[in-house]
Length: 117
Length: 123
Image 1: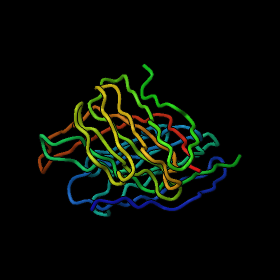
Image 2: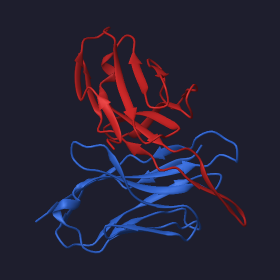
Image 3: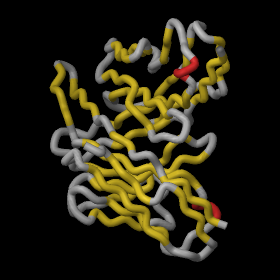
């Protein structure tokens, strides 16, 4: 079945450091890919998404490019801040055919990012 | 708009007790979901409801039941709680299928909006 694998954490960085969180996926169809962020004590929020190969999702300085050839969707940010400390989840959406029911999300295990001042 | 709301925020149960977790959304979404979040395992889908009047099992449905009361509300019930059900439970909703026809296939996305979670401990 479809699955998502992301790098284990925690990832500890100093403020203004470059961030990469790796994510690879396995899917039989044409999935959409997502990064969700969970701040301490809160629910998940959509950070960015990409719906087809070579699309780049971006938001709040974060970027991720949908690479079909390497089945990857790595999250990057050029300069992290203390406020970016959170758990980051990579996810894919298994698309049904036209007329199908709702899409279901398949999540990776999450990566804890801790940014130190 | 409140988005997705969940009650209660915290709950402690004894083994064998029952309870219902409530979820409501005010975004007129068709689809709703229940997940559990456990350390090192990410989020796992318990049940979902593609539309009002329908429910389906997800990855880990055993020990749970759900009710899609109306378009707004989707409740999760634990009939006889067990320590293995100690977890953080998240409800989510989405508008449903959005599909864009591509030259070589279909592309679709499903943005899910999450509630703040219920932290459940079963002793």
